[in-house]
Image (cartoon, rainbow, N blue to C red; front, top):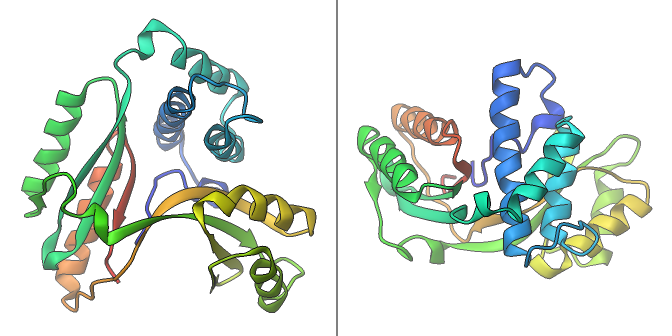
Length: 240
């Protein structure tokens, strides 16, 4: 639960309905626009790594090419003037830290919606910086084992400079320093490893354990409600 996003596992979710797919495409389009804006207006993924990452995710989600191109063009248009990134911080039940990343053209609207969800969930809205220090920015690459063993991918990833490797069923999560994500991702692909997704995430430095199952369920519902907002890109927690 440390790193959430409605579209992060889209390639593996074969049962996505049209309504959910439309919401995912909206979030992806917003992320593409932000990637171009924060990348100095560069709409070429070869020269804008953040854009390249989100475009890879968009293609994996079968987002139409014209939608991707429209989002890139929007970043250079006057319509993108008020479009910006905003980060919210706070605490859920059990003292669990929460960070919400959003992309919006109306900060007042988005802030009001996010605050309302916090209030209804019994969560507390924090000041900027109240939670962020508990997380670090890292790169995360999700790979499919296929014919390779965990040890194969582990050895390769370590040699490439990965900081941590985690086995999750048929997948292997490879964590890298922020600046090494592109190099490690490309090297894994070149070595024949299937990369499902690669993204920049906030990883909790320390996690918090919540024993009460009712609280855990309420926290999960709270996160899901946040993620259902069109403006919200990702939600991070330090829930163990």
